[in-house]
Length: 502
Image (cartoon, rainbow, N blue to C red; front, top):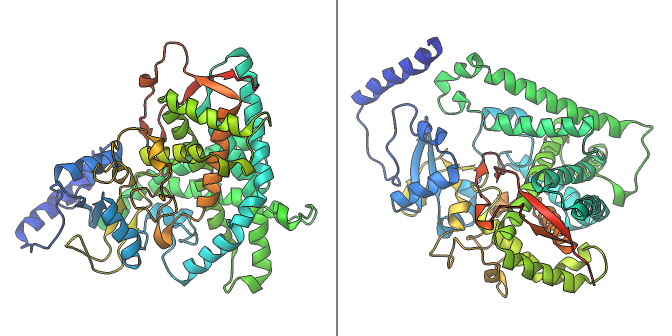
């Protein structure tokens, strides 16, 4: 009761204070009415699938741009390819900052990473390090043996289940695979599926997702920031940060151990490369400290582990709901690969329908339906409306990819729409931006795409997939759960059947 009074008494006070003030109308986009002090926070807190709720608001106000208030912070949401292009490309410089948050400030070592760092000289140098040394096409190619080995282990497990027609929890299997991939690529370690280290790894992931979904009052109503301490949010954030920091420090100490065998350059993991850059200052025009390295590890660790699994499961969900598409794709893969026994990376350029299926899945089920938020750094004009500095900007990629003015039959799964077109995933086609666009485009796009393509191709090559007895394709739900990457809420359970290659 004391806590409730401490929160709502100031709200009542500010309500009457606002009632006595004269307000001047500004040229703002339409949007729902808001409460004094808290704005529209109460609506977003109870929205469920936020991207879907914001899409409905856009439809209600018949506008591809809407305005809301998150406490004291203005927010705009854009839901059309035209306005996405304005935000992500044409006026990219005005919209390129990331909004500050209590949670990310702590977890990124005071914005020392690349995803949430301000768009400044430090960020530009970190971007160069990432694109040239960590995630270049050459570096991604060097991880090929790891990808192919981990995927072969997964397909072996599936083949064993196929012999007895056991139900497979594909969601769990995809998460384990992506976690193993990213651990070997980033840290040079393999955590066994049911070992204590893998359990720790999974717990770190779960903790991170949970704390990023925590509401921090100080982010939106600074005057009530003390509430975060009162309810224990700050203490919880500090504990999770310490768990992650200890994990990164242990990895660094292992790599610095003089007894550790030296690797050839082409076999170096991402942490090896970062340590080498720190020691050899000629390639880095600033002091690359341990906090910066930990922040980059956090980006790779979390983005890589979560988005690959999430994207894979959405692709397989879309396919099991469209069996004719799945059969067509399997026919392409099997005719192309023949009796080789597996799909390797040299085969991927030949599989045009596979790429079309994945692009269509990204369109219908983007793993990040609201692109990582942006914030304006100066006053700008968008669709005739005046947007003030320090306005948070959501680009609703989910709504954009279902825009009937841009896509024909937008709610249907039709991979053929991506055959014989110039549409790609590199951020130039603003009806489809799963990796973002502009200077803030995801630097891990190349690795993320090849991971998903190779996993899906091998999942479909040697086995046929069916739903458990009594489950129909139309019964497979597409409900999602909140997170930085929006995963399928309910596990995808399928039954594999051995395909006899003749």
